[in-house]
Length: 181
Image 1 (cartoon, rainbow, N blue to C red):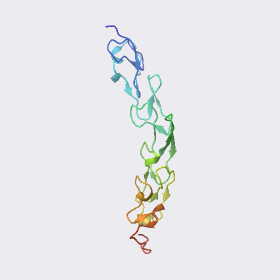
Image 2 (cartoon, helix red, strand yellow):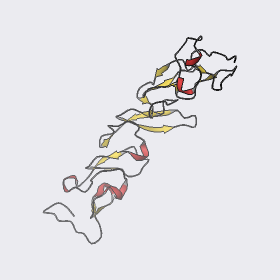
Image 3 (cartoon, rainbow, N blue to C red):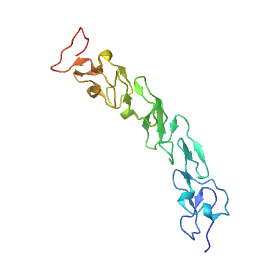
Image 4 (cartoon, rainbow, N blue to C red):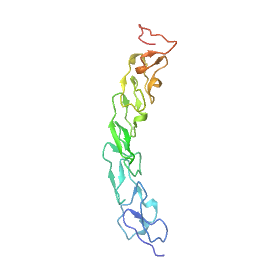
């Protein structure tokens, strides 16, 4: 059987194929030995790019994402996520990601934070999922704002409500001695 031996970045996916295809998205083949068909005859010969990298256009190698951009995991075709300490502010219609530094009061220790689902630390409050501002809770010592992946009243402990969880819910009263509802 006559077959084409493909160069770096390419594979012949069908046995006996005379055509070479680029490695599939998120993968590369750095093997430049065009005389060895065994290293260019299946998708398994194309390796996944590591986290924080994407394959170059020729799929012969990989290149580092420009920080604070990173990838969601191995084998990503694009730099489509934000590194820790940052959140994805927006992705435009072309898929271009903008990363912003996380504000105080947000737990951004992991990769892939997004504005809509920021993890708010205990003692802090955020009004809506699209709000970029995080505020200290009025009754922080009373535990009125336990934190979490919520916004508005959903961030308030039982008995509290309103902006900054600074009001007592109906059937609760403010105890000025305990400074709590």
